[in-house]
Image (cartoon, rainbow, N blue to C red; front, side):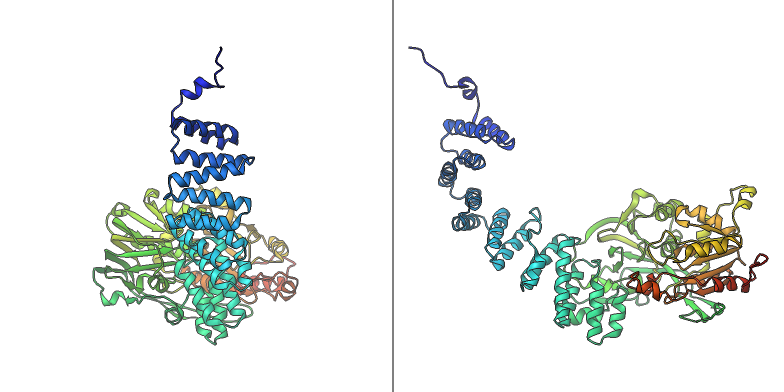
Length: 630
């Protein structure tokens, strides 16, 4: 009698158990569960007591979907063979969950967690199931536990904002705050906190609103928007001075200690107290500069444009052995070896950082670390007169950049930043960027004096900037071809635009002005352009930083928005010996009423009165062509 062998008899019998399980997994991953079942059964034939084979067999049947009773029996067999393995209970739980047998699924999830309390998938799966049943309390508890155990789990799987609205504010906050701990820049979690703070404010519970905002900032000091909430809440409590500080992104230290749920005590010190392991070398002494009143055809004196004496503090370099630095794009805190916050070397919300128990642990840095971060590094003016000033101080130390092992800088995101770093010849390979917050303890920190008072346009910094970018290599015929009358347009800007810019440009064109968009030019090109200018007209903006390249006697007319004026570029013009006047734009109430609003006066657009513009130029003895009257 002829014997008939099973299909693929020789192939199956040549495989090991490991081969069978591997092939089963491959077919399952490819969406071929029936083939996966065959290889699982072959593995079981080779070794009937193998729990892994029954696990995979149950999963294959579950995916196949045709034999749920076989999937269930396979999972239960795996549990029988290996009752201490939480994976077996978890797989059975997901099977029941998928079929809608929720009571059995909950029991299996709990059994998985009994075997392994830190089993993230079981916490997450059980949390999802409980949420679907409306048990938000236990759901968020399990999801929060999952996040505390491992960040390698799914992110927010339900609408926490909706939970806040339903009254589960505390529960949703616990999850959101755990998310922020693990991922400080996670926008969804931040939005939950914003919603909760808003709810506290709506309920007039201002103290809790402030406490929660501070708690979020202690985890991530650069979270956007929180200072607006702080300002609003403090204003409602009648704390106008504290609110004003928060409106510019600064939270007073006494507010932190008054409202924070958890804040550690900090020790403040100053360079004059000579803290341990800190040495300060003075590079320039205190300066006093006399400034005459700024001129205008319609004077409206504001801030310090009334003239007087400006005092600039002494500048130098601090050497901090075993010092600690925490830095992000808005805050830098420098601490001594004994963990005292050195106020003179820190800026931004350094007190907030020093008092926080939630920031990442500091990392050791072997070597000498130079701190060159500044607060508003994305602003051209601040970058040029703070970053370049600090780099200039630093370059006076030692034997050039080789004396430093690394440089701590803000994120390099703009062409002007890259061009400046190249001009200073700071090695790119040594740059550490503080984009997400950097916490380091170095063998030695070297910290140039940060600018505590703005504006500071001292002569040494002006000279350094001019030496870096003002080139005399162009032939005279090229220099002569550059326009002498310049209008620096902000037509490409996102804010503080001149609304009647076309009219302004046309009027100035008749006077021989060339309209320039500086953003399209390199710093060197801007420098050469401004160096040859005789008259500069410009709306208030960072482009006026380039006045540093102008020759003494150059005439400058700065145009301000109706509600916002600052003395920065008048101070720079005064330092460079320029002939300066200002003009205040007309009210833009009609424009604002049409919907073109901005949240702050400093972002307000400008409407230029053409008659006032021409009169101002005439007052500066800028020659008007025949037939034009101011």
